[in-house]
Image 1 (cartoon, rainbow, N blue to C red):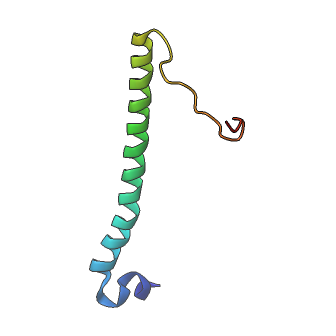
Image 2 (cartoon, one colour):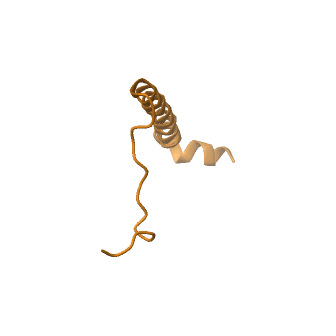
Length: 67
């Protein structure tokens, strides 16, 4: 088992890469979630200032008639 963790003498190079491979996607996910929440709050604030919902609902092409 010790040989596995030593990685044939390359452990000093391999384990930091594994750590980065786990930490970077985690940080990106946390930042993305925080930005999404920040943007959602901004939209709510702007809609409240405008007096209500400004955005129109998306149209569903399946329910629209051919014209």
